Image 1 (cartoon, rainbow, N blue to C red):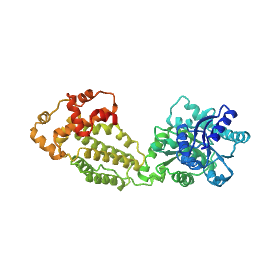
Image 2 (image 1 turned 180 degrees about the vertical axis):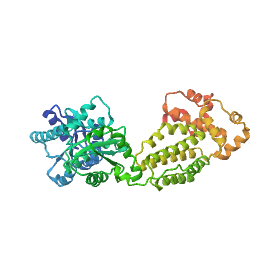
Image 3 (image 1 turned 60 degrees about the horizontal axis):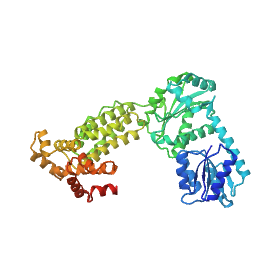
Length: 508
């Protein structure tokens, strides 16, 4: 059992650690903290099974620390180290699930008694998580995904425990990726739900690759009543705990044999919060009541967006993107059609961006933005990802000032690619079949600086990056950014930064 001790009195802290060591070799003190803030950091790092904590401490008191630890998704056992005056905190401690209060100074017999109670609870909790020696949470996931060496065995485990004459439901919680670390807290809420409704037969798994938490439930409760239970108890409880984006869908299985082929249906239902929002329990009968419209691609809106990108009109770009989002909400569409249209829309933006700035195109493509659109299960996710791309486009346009012409964009991209070589205005102009004078005028007009100044600035920025690494010599960096004369490089660098390269390297 991993144990964290949070106590500001050094003698009490060390003494408790020594007593635990005498009680059992299985008690591993993974950390000791002198205040609540340090305790919070250690709890996040070590994820202890049990926390001993004082109440009155510097920076953050013990109960507030426990509250934050539980908000973070952890659910350790807690023993409060208290004086007689601290019993005024008892009510708050009960709400936080505090297991025991130990009066200071702590005696060997009192500690032993408390630890025996915690051991019994800890053992019972671990037994509940095992079925025939197999972690219970592995069973449902492998049956749903139809994979694993123990697939048939896992199915038979479920089959042997299920009451075939009762209702069988497959519930799926879509967690979104930011809730991965808080799955322990969500699972506690699931156990609270089962306990409240006296549901004894259930299995759950966390499918991290899908951000799903599916639950198989066997109960006498009728389907519509079960929907109400999910909405007004489980979902409400999750909302109260701050999980605003979790969605819930449910399949009514006609028999246990349907569970093996239900995963595709579960995935399909998980997309419908894009249409219904996050506060409805999604099920097939609810979807069947809808009149689904054909979702035609909004070509006019796309043209507005692409024109805004080419003209670097950020305000118009944001407005057009909002119009696109509003179009998706204007009628009831199949969520798969909505995702397909969003994918096509983003692909068009990336394609235009590639023509203007290949680095930007590569950056967004490497981030997997199209894949993230395809796996979205709520409208909020889609909107966030659409806005993210538009914001990125705006940032790039700002970086390049108000460059409107394709000629100047091509010149900028040429500099980005060949800045380490001896490049010139004449060379770039010749490559585009225009005169150097014309390219120079365009550069000065659109960037408000000359071609040579832009080239110097770009090279100096690259030099800064290399200097902070401290792995290269000054002359090597000079050559790397296009200067064969290191003295001239140092002169230019000081003109632009106010310090010599060596000074910059020491400072950063």
